[in-house]
Length: 258
Ligand SMILES: Nc1ncnc2c1ncn2[C@@H]1O[C@H](COP(=O)(O)OP(=O)(O)OP(=O)(O)O)[C@@H](O)[C@H]1O
Ligand SMILES: [Mg+2]
Image (cartoon, rainbow, N blue to C red; front, side, top):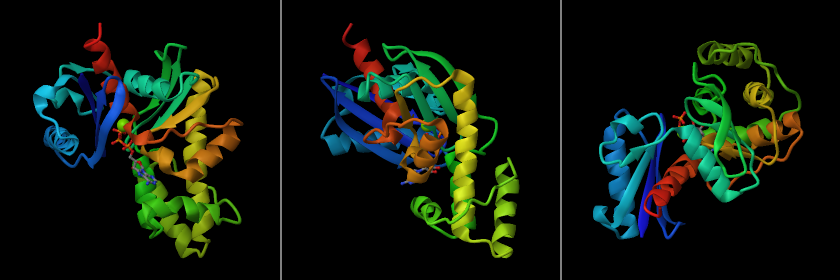
């Protein structure tokens, strides 16, 4: 039996297909400007790649900010629940999930069944999210995937005082113009993300084990600085960006197995 989860995020859309409760296939694609089109395309391409047809999927659960517009979904469930469930699947000892996506970031407290019992969220602005890092990578003229290495080569940390992405971008441009090393600026940017996330963690309280999900989990500098700041060892799952879609697929799997 097969079930699927789809997470239509602000920047990326993921699909996870489960066979007998195990991951058979997953896809990560850009969302683009239309979440409905992105969802259709992602499910179509996933089915094709896995050699399946739409009727093979007995249940589809949708999550992410674009979940409301997905007509083919049997159920729509919040990202909080789905990221929690995905993290629990990878490691049932996880009690705190840090999700840093493209547009929002959150900290979720789980019970031992992997159910969300508390959370704190920053969804008011892009500061402290993946989009913030994308804008800053551009300002520093480095690929997003190279931002972490740039920061690792820093001798010092240049602190970034602006809280807002737009102001922080002008601040970065002006720091570069003043001749400050790009490495030190990059370290400061990662530090500011870690500071914001630590603030959210403190709101729900840190309970180990801690796992990071969302695309920004692929930024090693963010994870390293957060480890130091929170005095813990954050678990990075095999593919952190699919956590929401994986949780959605597991919830779909539950539906057809009750
Ligand atoms: N290889 C990578 N290295 C560093 N960062 C990455 C990498 N891949 C993705 N990211 C980061 O992940 C972010 C996107 O994360 P994700 O796919 O979880 O967002 P989303 O689910 O679409 O957004 P949201 O949940 O806020 O709606 C990008 O903005 C980028 O900063
Ligand atoms: Mg997301």
